[in-house]
Length: 274
Image: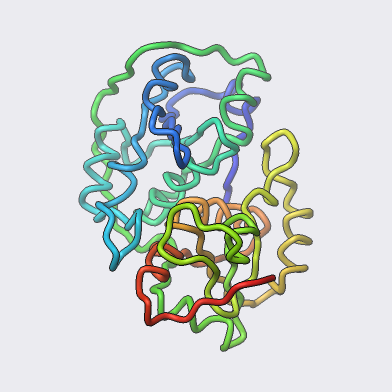
């Protein structure tokens, strides 16, 4: 599974690529304004909150998966066709864009990659930026679903006790329960292993090499043949961890509801500490 496209590769071969700009960060609702102020030529703005997630609920979490039909309608608005090459990007090392990568892969598209290093890598490679709105010609993509493995809360929680590994992609202090800025309770799912998403990236905001990522995940208990699940706060940055695992040659399942779903049920156990 090819996960990444470099800025140099994109500059050398931009023909027929659908570019999706997924600028979003927790606490920063101004992604569209950032996009309008400067974006890759032809890049279409994707609204994570409304196009890459269904409405939040205590039962499903803060960013439930959209229905396949809703995702297909959005993808057609973005100009995606069945034979499109899609490259997704953001300005935060792929932490938001990976959600679009994962969803389109889940929907059944195979030629979807993340622009490694995002906006900064593009400009560093000499790529220009455009301003203003981009309205593409509508696409005709048909999404079939089932392209990426998914876990329910129960399946995710059962992994550590059955020889699998459940990775928690949030910051270490949230995993340990020292802070919880968004969700109802602090801590982590019992048996989960702390694996902050930031560890997937180098100092320049690019993904670490496959070899380095492989070492990282091996140190966290992921061996060949291990069943791996990933969660985060609400299923956004967990997609980045799934992408990093895929870059290392490891298949992992995403738990979409993640901690926001788990912590909303007071009957579910919570662990704290390292």
